[in-house]
Image: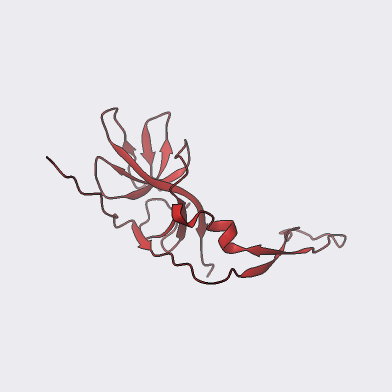
Length: 150
């Protein structure tokens, strides 16, 4: 019998722990948005309450977060970005997933189904071509990102 170990995280990713305790916290949310051009004086700012955990961490048992540690997905994903990943979502064409090919370390790449490859958005990095005989494991699909604006 051969027991195979699970792939590890590549240097492109840094796993983060998710811990839930206590009550939900709600923040004020202005549903009408904010204009990046010239605001209309007729716009009403209607306040609503938004729970960030309900919005971004629904199904916590199928949600994990990971920090981007490499530059292969720049400019889409930048070093330090926190990715909110859902393991109960199927990786579809042109979506970004946390993947391993043939038991290599997990990395973050975009799926190009038509050309059967995993694409690095940064042109300085090569795409990973997928053969019919390859084993591709997807831990989850990147659904949101958190980026600090400096």
